[in-house]
Image (cartoon, rainbow over all chains, first blue to last red; front, side):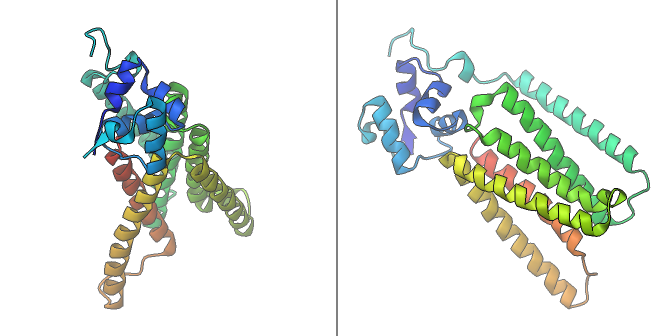
Length: 62
Length: 200
């Protein structure tokens, strides 16, 4: 699965740690999400969408 | 996207290859020193192969606990909150439990050593449960994948060994030896699961 996490994070000038704190996960998890090594669960995907205030399908794609 | 927009902050920038090589050499050097120290300490006191295996496993686990302390200090946000200390406790207790049956009898009777090992096992189990509860979803996934990989590997190995033993083709392995082999397989499985998620 592809995602735009890195771009969205950069637009807000957030570090991976900043995003991790907002999502309630570790920085390793954010790094794994951005590099495609890990796909989020549905609850986490919804939290990501809420943090970036965008629909899930605009953040994640196949 | 603005040309001034950063895609990475200093914290997230990839580490240079030279630094990774230096860290690898440093860890390798520390491992060599640790191995030499253990060998000097043991001398000829260990005569059973299953004790050899468990001394190595116990030392590795305690070494991993010490490395985890370093990670907690240097990169605290790389691990979910609270998990770092629990990981250290789990690793350290596992190492001590493997070393205790071989060395603690110098301090107490076998019955007391066994009782202490059981107490440590209960404590380690509690720490593992707390670690599971505090872990984020990716760390839980890694823990589950580690268990899955270890289970299938050990099940396959155990069947092969059991069939060979039943056929009289190999000697019986002690339970103590089996637990040392199990820990080795578990550590390898853990490395595989963690590497898949970029956690190494």
